[in-house]
Image (cartoon, rainbow, N blue to C red; front, side, top):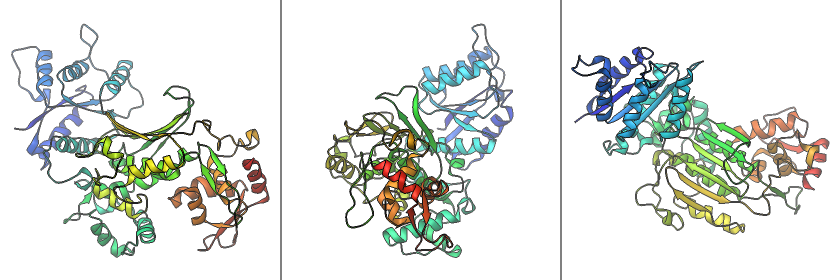
Length: 499
């Protein structure tokens, strides 16, 4: 028996979208087998009030699908619109609820209040859309997730599902080129990049189907615009003054991009806001930078959250840096057979998104499949930190405890006001280079960074522009053996940072 989808909205505002959405569901080869949309305007006249008719329909539906826009709708004698009454009925009856929010310049006051009400009560926050094409993409992801959760789809994990709206043209050749170069260096990936070889590369990674269909994992890895397909595939980062989520927020960022880019940006967010201690020079001019939290543990927690999250969810990965701890929230659940207890010991690797996990491993972002959480624990214990914790509620959460002796962010405040106009990333770069002359790869290795694009944009170029770093071969900026050293201005700041 088909599942009924009750489409709820202000009818006059979304008349065309309602019709097109119902038509799409009825004509789609997969969805037409499992779903039947319900539109109140299609129903024949009945011997009962309109309000009772639509509330009865909302109560018996399997899925409640809400479209929100500018208008709240006509209000009844109690000041409530039909749409909000339908939502309350669906909530009371435990109906599976989905909400989609149209991006508009203005929203009526009561519609804004209704939106806030939904955000506080629904597990998945409303997904925003501009056009019907975007709405259709989001509805597709949501219904696929529903079928997967209900055990209807037997085609494998969500990341391996072919996206019917995507083609190989939606993939960025430069991102594929970058991946192949890194994978060959890190894991001896056997294939070389060329335009003619792209299909073979994708096929070897199980990212393309027999009929050239593109998997969701391929889009997450290589799409021109990942957030077009997965709006919630972002990482939200925030730093708080104390030990609780409360305003004012010290720092807040939302990062987008492919899985590699969001991991790099999120790791940088954390490392640029925790304590960094400069070690002593040994046999070379290079100095070590020791962080308050172990870089491998921070990276592991963030990579796990990004790779193993539920990509059909409208929630985002959240990273919260408190005075006493780092929390990484993942909108997803542990796979069957894996418990919190097992995470604290060696256990079988059961990735939630196996098609996505393998390329991430090949790029060196996962050190070894199946040892992530135990490595994370050991890195923290080796540094003398409290044992990390894991918990599962609506999200999966990793907690890394900070050193109680270093509760204030030092890389953002080292040397006081004299360095106040310099970003934490540039300070880290100067500490990493020290008195040496180092290549890009050597600097990235010292700082624990993996993404060269983000390294250039957030570290190297700002430092060069501000006059702190110079090129060894300025006349040939793209030389393969290019190296970097601190200018006189950079050395002066380096001396301040070491104090």
